[in-house]
Length: 96
Image 1: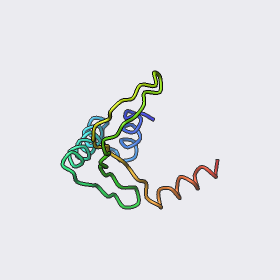
Image 2 (image 1 turned 90 degrees about the horizontal axis):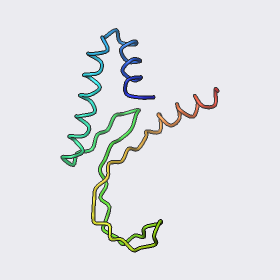
Image 3 (image 1 turned 90 degrees about the vertical axis):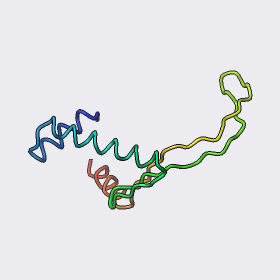
Image 4 (image 1 turned 180 degrees about the vertical axis):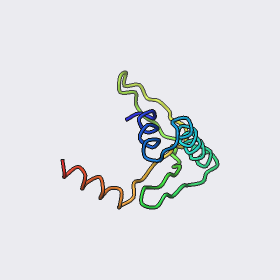
C-alpha cells in the first residue's frame, strides 16, 4: 500500500477531499519526523510508539569485500507496535 492508497482510503472514510486528506497525512508525517529529530518519542495508544535509538560506534565488515569498516555512532528511528495492534493483525491474518 502506498501513501496515495492511504490518502484514498482515508478520504473515502472521512468524506474529506483527497487534497485535504493528503495535507493532513503529510502534516502527521512531518510532525513525527520533527519530534524524533528533537529527541522526543511519540506514543499512540492502541497503535504503537516511535522512538530514536542510539547505535554505538563499532567495527563492521563489508560482506562483499570482507574489508573491515568503522561505523560511527548514529541514531536510528524505531517503531514498536502496541500489543492491541499485533493482536488485531493476528486475528485478521487468521481470518484469511
